[in-house]
Image (cartoon, rainbow, N blue to C red; front, side, top):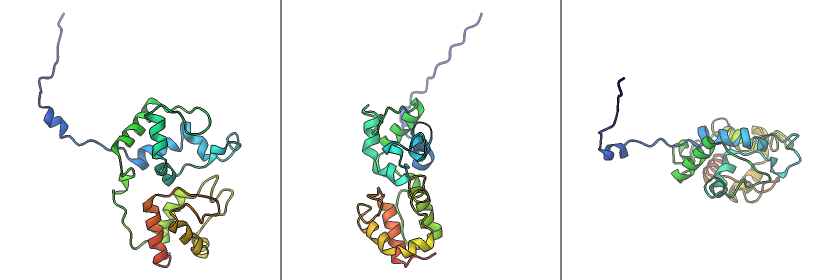
Length: 195
């Protein structure tokens, strides 16, 4: 009988410290956790979840606006911020903890900086609308779908919303908007809302 023993004799830990640490992608890693599985009830707006006040759709901007709640939940053991008990898998909790530990900018997978200029409805505003405003309990659900013509008609409402960073002006109540979303909308409005 032969016994093999393998051991590592490499001792240069400085080389290991120089290896790049892969960042957790907000859009690719965190958002999928928040819109499926344990958190999927937020995105249904239908029975059996429709009777709960926490049924609102979790959108990109909303998640970013609630960083502290995630920290309380996954790092401080304070539990689900809404009603009921919701458990994340070990892998999901690890992903969110790693994401929080990265620190700002939390949406670094958007190339870090928020650049503005040259916004159009099709290339800039529509993707934001689809990930921030549209859903079962929001626009396109019980409230009107906002296409280009509807947004142009509501320009003054959009300006009021963006000038308050979402805290006022929205007929449906306060919005959680990232500074990047606000900047892009303001730039688009200043450019006279090109299609």
